[in-house]
Image (cartoon, rainbow, N blue to C red; front, side, top):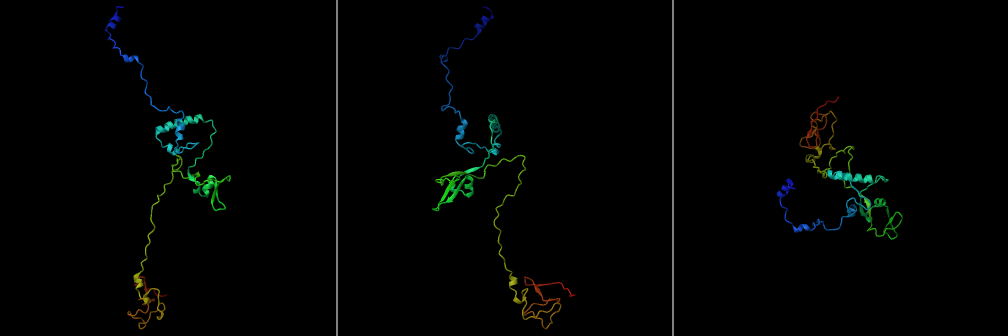
Length: 254
């Protein structure tokens, strides 16, 4: 009793004074006010609608899902793995997903009507009547909306093993070809009729090839009554489209 333990107790500090608040219970943890958490959170989210959400299916474009950040892909991979493991015993069919949009029945052509299973005909009064495949008449076709296939705006997924598509030139916005006005040759139009190429006056005899006209019968330079003889004596002088004489090399007749 009177050993070291007694000395230690005498050296211990005195206890703290009594606090009356310690006799009451601890206050509860504050919790957010509102309805309790739902037991069907996925159904609540899908009931709000969204891109690719229908009454029976939820479509996620694979190209967009594979472009998400890596943490999101890791969580999605774990969730899908659990989903497939739970329902792998079912006989899964092959699904065929077609991009579609809602259109009014009166705005479709014959091919689109045949695709959705409707036909249009004209009655005795000249009005268009829309019928189903069973023959039942469609009431208020202006308000009837159906799903028609359309082009998919989402970029499809490209197979890594598939060859890369060939690069094609980008079409350019080029205007129409210019139209050039044909300017007539004024030098050819100003020539007198007797000097025009390919013309021959009726009253001037044409000398035979290789024989030159006598000096007495040759027309003077002042009179434009016929073609001038060539300098080498092989025939009449020829003129080009500009009105100037054409010089040809002299070739003796064999």
